[in-house]
Length: 217
Image 1 (tube, rainbow, N blue to C red):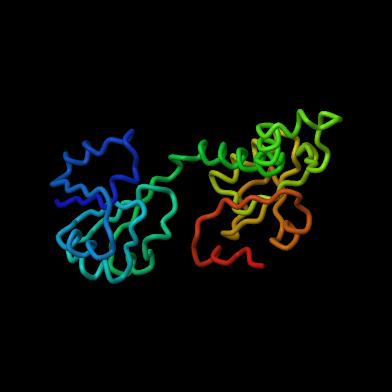
Image 2: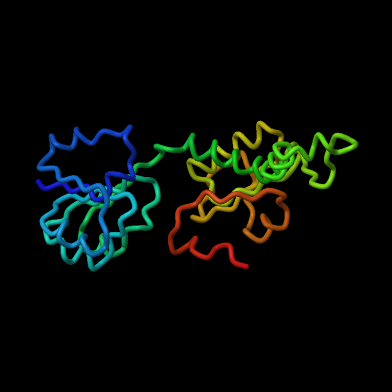
């Protein structure tokens, strides 16, 4: 069994891949450019990729390929329909980063909402202390308690964002990108209604045919 890791460098130094050696001959590449891809996967039974695109052309040139492992949650770098057609199994790492993504969601929310870049700049630049009223009123921000938070995609990550948002006192509504009723705790609405009612909107959905260009101009 030939196992090929195409972009080991993207996984970070805190992740060990040594366990994979128990399952076959392991070949590790730090990064893989498009021009090097076909030669590296020609005899592969299993491909492990994070960022490298595995499309129809790549799969057609990997005659032994049986499994594509995406070392992430999103699988938009793999042609899933063509893989299914060829009988190639595709697996991702579901749920590995839920807490980190939720934390990052709120970090970005407060960075934007509280105008942190601006206030950091004026404090470090001495503008705040030089102001005769020792304050700044030109960049107001608001509390999120009582605001309506619209979540697009109420999967594993979306549900956890909803839970934390609710703990802040937000009214949570959601739009299901899959068309399924994911949770009776929160109100399900159409996308148009969500965008009309929400003061805060966050997207927690995979990039696929249903979600591509979901939010336009």
